Length: 319
Image (cartoon, rainbow, N blue to C red; front, side, top):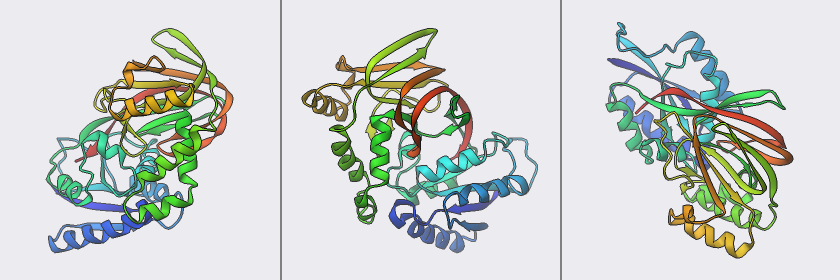
């Protein structure tokens, strides 16, 4: 089936990588006489406005029984934050509207976890060759205190995870490192900064009909695939194609033990630590009465007490 590609482009993703990638992709599409229309974001949240307008007027759900000459396909060029915004913009529309994604960010964890090529031009050819979309499970979340809900393509974190994201997003070094394609280093610098300041906090985890309490939670992450923080394998067993969530919790311990746990983490042997806890379930509820940073796909939701319920939902991605 012939396709018309609707490109939503965040030029600033990855410290300007988005603009450079878009230029190359558009040139290739023009040379190959591929039909496309471009939309460039020019302010925060603009991608939501663009995608919702497209969903109302142009995009249609995928079906193997489609009898049209040209299928309108949404393609996102940006980072994980841009993809997070786009999936949430489509939340109230048909879940069978597929999304194409060309990673241009500093972390690109979704591409790494889902099996999309991390190199943008390879991801583009992967998208062109695909004949049908693939089903990927995303995280659904509903926060009862603030009365908000949404989707996450990567993970949702409370405590250290979110504090690191907040520090990385506000770091003066991130934009400079992005220019040299070393954006992941900003997470390393932020980890070192936050490790010495993040305190343990009490948390309640409701999972598989049981309540599990921790007095000194440190890092809490609900994830749908193995990676966070630009390629760190926090949950190597996680599978984005299964309707199961992975929840990881690390207890607050002394610095020596923390650095030892980091070494285990980098070697994918963190399960050997008694301070590393892993749960799998189709649903979770997490309650934290102490104000802590919370993030979804690197987007800070706030520093607050929280009561979040998690589940999964199938979305279609074209690659």
